[in-house]
Image 1 (cartoon, one colour):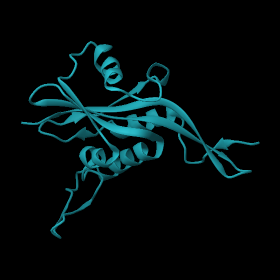
Image 2: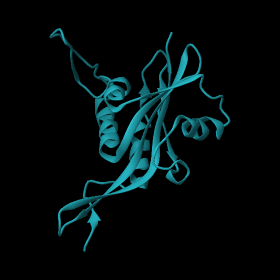
Image 3: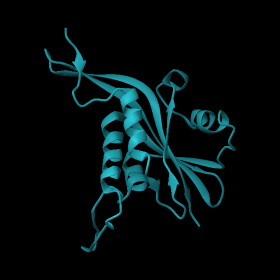
Length: 174
């Protein structure tokens, strides 16, 4: 049996490099624009399911940051709308039939690339909304890296699970 890497898959190192390069000049829009940082969380420490206690331990306790007051885990359907919103779109359509266009300086291609990297290379993705106080919150978009292998003899895809990958930023809401 011959198993090869799927031609579109990225190793974990390649994914981290692509995410880092893509987010390098992006600021996540809120009342104060913050950068997006990339962190790898060991699957050996976490296992197959990321819990609130694991999230707190890896992203707050180990970095000696004050833990959030409250943490909400958002599912795939909701976080797509929440985290990416209209950022990857050039033409924004509204339910009333109206539309708007992103300004020329908006980095649509970078947001599209980031969106594709997340959807094509991470599974079990969720948005963790960590409320720090009445104004500040951390957003952690976290999923598990998957390396896709292809068996040309059977045309089967084999998935090899890797570490958890976190894209983190902060938002201000007043």
